[in-house]
Image 1: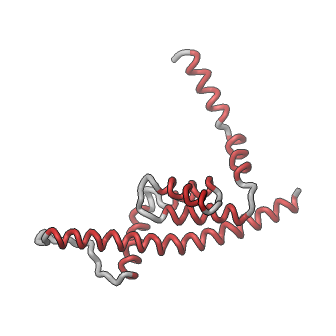
Image 2: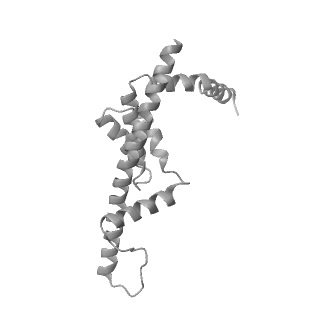
Length: 162
């Protein structure tokens, strides 16, 4: 390792200390509670869909369109993560199956012909997307309201201190 590498690593470590990270979050969180709550809700909504790798991008785009907090939208897409994928998407699938009144299609028998396989794939996809949309909307409302009241309380408490 040469001296340039050492200096470069030291500058990176110095830049990414806790004070700089906290000031970055503070700088991006000084907007209204409604602005921050929209970011939270949009992030959670986007995170409920099974678009692995694109949830953050979708969250940021939607937050930009609806004028919400981009940083909170990106962070809140992690409502689905490697620990919650299976339970969340299974729940989304079950809700979607219930909403479109389709029977459980998780069992595929080898004797199916091609058309039946395509039909089952379409039913599974629609159940998953409809369930993800319904669950995402409901979780977005709950977390958005929670975020709004949290930021409202947090700002009121900070204004009394200052």
